[in-house]
Image 1 (cartoon, rainbow, N blue to C red):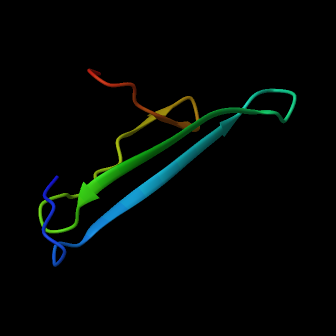
Image 2: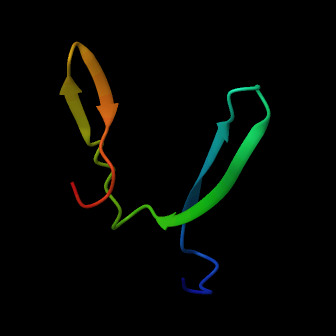
Length: 56
């Protein structure tokens, strides 16, 4: 990351919950809007859509 006050950075917050409804995870990821692209990776199996794990 740069320290230039004119640069624009954004972040994504991700939360997940366990089977009891308790928050289990939280993360904040900063990214450069000029260079970052979002790609969703999903897998269709048995009538259900699942997100793919990294490396699959």
